[in-house]
Length: 298
Ligand code: PMP
Image (cartoon, rainbow, N blue to C red; front, side, top):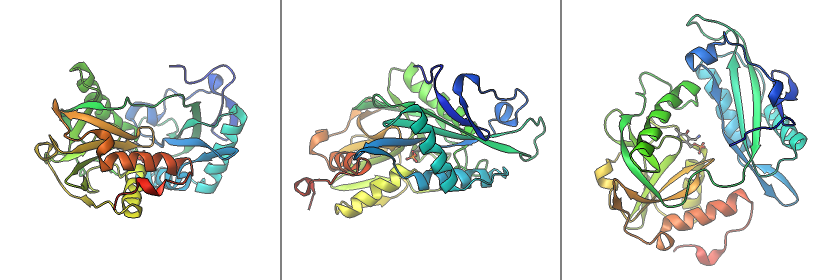
């Protein structure tokens, strides 16, 4: 996958530069310790233009992640939103994935960041991040303990755990991992939140041991609009295995169907599930298209 070409423009430490020419310092705290915070945002073709989905929520979370990491950072959500639209415009991108990251200056000590700066990278989005109908396995890796990390922050270092879990699943012939929290309850996947459906109700892990996703919040809003019951609760993989349906959700994944967990298939035909209704409604929401009423469930 080519993320950038010789022509690609990014925002980097106060200016628009060519991605191929930007350099980060080898003595950066971010590089050595995973001490950087980032976001993943999607932009979609909406009407005649380009619109980022929930830009405010993403940039508010980025600022909150920096604050939790005690990184000095002063740009506002509005300033970062404007800069991002300019990056998209300069590259002529509409359907894109945007990766803003706050990096810290050279510092080999374990003290808090002394200086930080923002980079905004983007690339064109051609197809889905995950295949449809995923086969997933319960990972032997657990999510980071909430007493050891600010799990609600999107910090680069947390993703070493995600790489281990995702790679383990792939090495075992699965598409993705289901990762448990340190108490053995279902938390999330390596890069998405998770829901399962049983007897007309959707269930998802509560906040506390997960990255509380913006897509997860959107799914809950859609459930509310469509009168689909949804509950946050702690549950084990045993409860989820063989349920009616299940899906991952995240900015990149959007809403992606699960075919099986630990080789036990979900029972319903995907297209007959409420989860499918949510998938269709989500697609409409990001494109700002009305969701047809007849697809609503009573
Ligand atoms: N959990 C993890 C670990 C993630 O990396 C992501 C992707 N950002 C999510 C959940 C979903 O979050 P969002 O819906 O905000 O993209």
